[in-house]
Image (cartoon, rainbow, N blue to C red; front, side, top):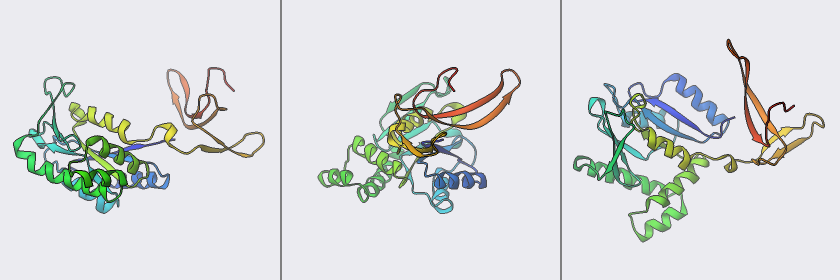
Length: 243
């Protein structure tokens, strides 16, 4: 029932067996993904090691679009490689407030190298990035973002972000990345299903005014409200007392 997914990896534990199981299941169902390296504030956090594990153990084309700004107890934010800016998260508000500013001097060279690698990789696989790169190596962020979306939807790359969810650090950029890179319902092919009466295979677009098609994917008994049925609606409208 998923159009897209976020693979959450521990910055200390890296790619774990359960991560591999879920990742390969997503591959089987052709679900586009982005990745979030969590717990960057824990002792032993290593962003680069997790990205390397994703490439080696999962076979994923992991492509960092951020660099962590510090790690362990010094983790304070992220470096946005598309906009080339630093995003810091306020400790007092547990990350709810963020400050955007220029790159810190100590990370300038690393950010330049990482952005160059990102641009070169995308230029080899996307004509619009290549055209912009031939005009200027400083490709605009909007061009890179659009290319990342196209390649993510094609499951050719996995954008990687960083943060510390418990303290809400990196969560706002992650939410933006969901909008920027993962598919909306109109981006996926029409869903195919069997008509319950005629048994004919039909295809339905993601349209409120198309006939109803839905998938009940989970049942749960709740001690207060009774049986719950979780439903993904693909087309049409599901209203109270619908049959």
